[in-house]
Length: 374
Ligand SMILES: *Cc1c(COP(=O)(O)O)cnc(C)c1O
Image: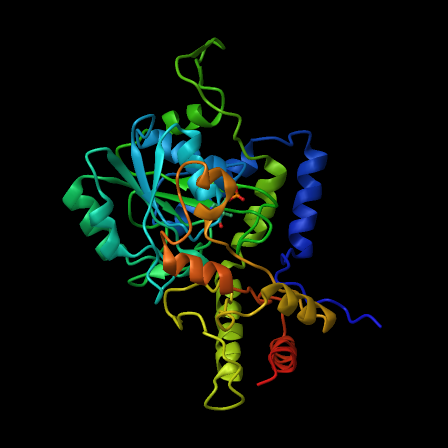
C-alpha cells in the first residue's frame, strides 16, 4: 500500500515560464546573453537599484564575493556552524580560515553576542546566514562590522523575498549572495546572484565570473587576474524571470502555510507533541523551511521512516558542519558549539512550498500526531 509522497519542497514553474525556456532554446543563443541581462536588471530592481550579477550557483556567488571582499590566504572569516556546508567550504576554497561562532538558539542564526569575542587581527569578513529565511539582525550585524572595519558577505541563499525593517533583503548592506538552487524560494534550476556594494566595479565581478577575461572594442582581449567559469545560462535566466513574477505571492503563501502549522501544532489547542517550534516571525522571514526540533534524545531516523510510511517527506537541514570529517580534520570537535549541535541533531524539515494546500499541512500534522504519540 503506497501513499503518494508529499515532498518537503517542489518548484512552482508555470506554463508561461516553460514556454519562455522553449523560446530561448529555439533562439540560437542559449548561454549567457539577453535573458541573463534582463534577469540581472529585474533582480536589481528588487534590490533597490543596486548592481546585481548572476552566477551559475550560490556557491560560486559566495566564492566570488569573498574574493571581491579581498579575502584570501591568512585571513579569517567568521560564520555559523549551522548552515549548508557550502558557506564554510567557500572560505576554505579562497584559502582563508573559517572561524565558527555558535548560534543563538532563539533564532538559530549566528549569535551576534559571540561575534566580537571571535574577532582577531586576522578577521577580514563576516559571513552570516539567514537560516530558513529568517534574517540575521542587520542593525546589530552592521554595527559590529563598522566598529571593527570588517566586510560582510550576507549568505542570503535562503532569504530572497525576506525583509529587514520593511526593506527587501538585498536592498541594503555590503555583499549579498543569493542562491537559485531548485529547492530555494526562487529557482533557476541551479544559479545564484551577487548584489554588489558601491566600491566594487561590476566589471571586476564579471571578470571573476568568467576566466578573468577583459574584452576590448577592437575584438582583442586580455587576462590580468584569475577568474572562474561561473556564468549563468539564458535558459536558466528565463526560468528565473518567470519565477520573479511570483516571488511576492510565493512568500505570502509560505507565510500562510507556516501560520497554519503553528495553529495546528500549538500544544494549548491540541496534543503536546513535545516539538520545539521554529521562531515565529511573520514580518521578516520568507519561510524558506518549516523546521521544528524533535524532543531531545529522539531517534530521528526512525521518525523520518515512520513519516515516510505515512506519505510525508521529511528533510534534515542541517547537521552542525564542524562535525563533518573535513572540519574535524581542521581541528573542530564535538562540544564546541553546543547550541548548533543540539539543533543540528534534532531538526527536521517538514513539507512547505507554495503549491501546498491547507489540507496538506493538516495531513502532515495528523501524521506527526500518529508518529509522536503524545
Ligand atoms: C543553497 C545554499 C548555498 C549554496 O547555493 P548553491 O546554489 O546550492 O550553490 C549556500 N548557502 C546556503 C545557506 C544555502 O542554503
